[in-house]
Length: 412
Image 1 (cartoon, rainbow, N blue to C red):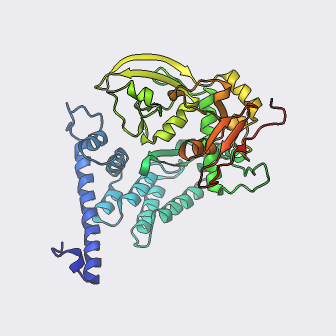
Image 2 (image 1 turned 60 degrees about the vertical axis):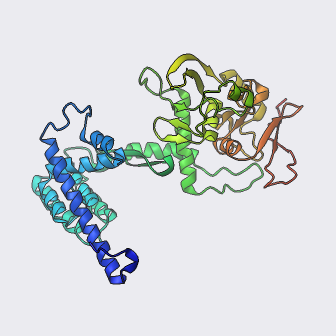
Image 3 (image 1 turned 30 degrees about the vertical axis):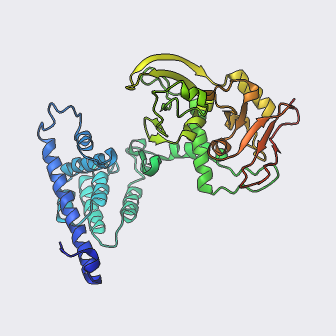
């Protein structure tokens, strides 16, 4: 490598060193794969407390578990595909495309002969080795091969073969989760059908067009599908409880009342809450989730060790939600037409701040407007007529004139 600082290099030197580093990175990847393959043949993790190489690598470095799993998975595939492994170690194909080709060759259409697989392997490696090739081009070639062998008499067509299904949900930047998958025709049609009505444009009550992009509408529909499944309680028991999201937060963080904070002098304010799957989340989101969920209070000592576990408290009962549906008719936010079945029960005065769980402290809000109330300066009250009144932030209305919330004509 060039010993000069980057600013000292001319254009040709900069380009040359970048290409050298790309080559060096591939050589390091190749070496790591060879070493991991060797680890598979030995008991190198014996007594270390790790079940798998990927877990050991994650626990011994700052690499994410997903990256470790991909690296170990590639090594496992290349153990089974020596021809692809040779191309990878020579530097003809990179790790991603080597994984694509090896995975296809290990899971070809069921009526492909070994000779057909060998021929397809050569075609795919030839394509993957071109400088202009990308993963999409390799994937398209794989799809063409699958289509060619899709009509067969000895098994299920490729498009309907559920054994080829894949689904990935991995944590990304900022705690967001990236979802991608490949489903057979029937399950794909089932998903599209369920999403269709949930992702349709929903104009406002005054006729204003839905401004969400199609992609955002589909994402909202998918989230609504998850919420309905969760609320229906149809999920299997896991670890003795039904599927749920566990959010852990400091009592001081979850309340705005100074009197309650003073009662907890040894409790630390962290400024965030924590979930098992995606890590830290904002306190506003944690408080929003606590509006319409089952809450278990666990008392901890100054070292974070549980002292006592209180009973679960349901913050909005089924009869209360029915009454809210009659009073609010759906999302109470001005101009929103979301039906009540798609809404959460929001505490006006938060439950952790001593707010009661009664109708005069609860309103229905859709997911979007629930987030709006927790993450912005919008305020809401129940007026003397027991109907909702909203107050916009000063950035929207400097005088913060009250705006009546949605209410069906039959509401009392």
